[in-house]
Image (cartoon, rainbow, N blue to C red; front, side, top):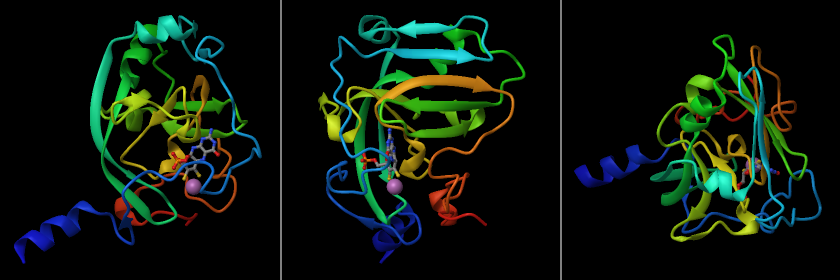
Length: 198
Ligand SMILES: Nc1nc2c(c(=O)[nH]1)N[C@H]1C(S)=C(S)[C@@H](COP(=O)(O)O)O[C@H]1N2
Ligand SMILES: [Mo]
């Protein structure tokens, strides 16, 4: 009985465990009808906005950032969770240091190669489990899961984990991203069942 209580606490309210992350082909396809097809050699990540040193990283420069591995649970707003996903990539906070973000920047805006957008407060991005990921469970991140590179913010619902990452813009005030402009919550906290706008 004790064990059951423990495992229940691991899962946020109204979520069910499934065995693998559902990919773009299975879920709602977001705003594009076509999967962004990006070769690693063509992929670029730009970092700008409220920073002292804007960056444009190609694959080699991205791979030269300090690399890390982080195991976390993945929670989708549609009610499924996948436990113990092993992500590899750069810790988000290393990018913040490299770009020298200005003291008044409090949010980051994310643009993706499919046109998707989202935003996050800096304080949610500084945890060591927030990874700019290029590998999942020991393999290159599959394209339908956001490859070559996606951000992973495991403590929030997955719509705050932008796939096919293209650009990060630091900013003083917040803006609403693609889903957050509609019915979805901008705070997206699975532990508070925080799916929709209040
Ligand atoms: N670039 C991009 N990122 C995105 C989306 C999208 O449409 N485009 N959808 C979001 C939503 S609504 C969810 S639930 C998750 C789904 O991630 P998955 O396909 O790996 O399960 O990605 C998020 N990131
Ligand atoms: Mo979603």
